[in-house]
Length: 176
Image 1 (cartoon, rainbow, N blue to C red):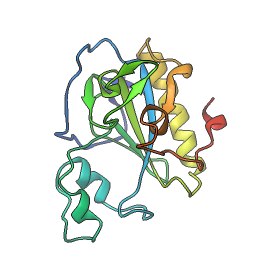
Image 2 (cartoon, rainbow, N blue to C red):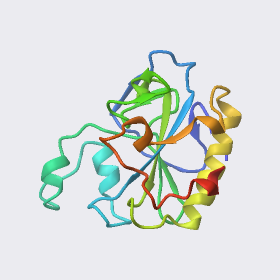
Image 3 (cartoon, one colour):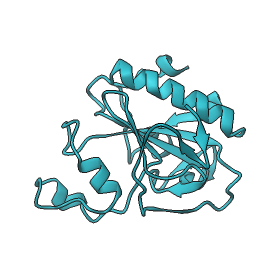
């Protein structure tokens, strides 16, 4: 796996409109792990792509009526089978963290890369996801010198009280 012009090679690319320029394009210094499933608890659906591309149909599921107007994205999704989809190039600001703070620095979207794992906080992630996540992390660490293993965190840590993902089902030891 390599990175070419801030896109991972050999994966699916679905550009999201939900991104913008970083305040400092050279400051890519945090990696944030999230989880998502749409509808909640359901896997291998087209709905995550649709959410990140503003095309989620509110009539497809009752939960979608609450979220279909959100303008959110992540840089990358790792599905249950280990396959990846990239929505935002790494040099752009994806809209994944919301109101957030890491080590005294607000607005984590400005300086972070957001990786979504298809899953829930209460269902174990798959070995294929961990294997792919490790490869992605190693590739990012080689490419972006301000990233480090010490600056990998969960959404719950940068938005405590507001977010709880990736949750207790995520085994941090597998990526250290």
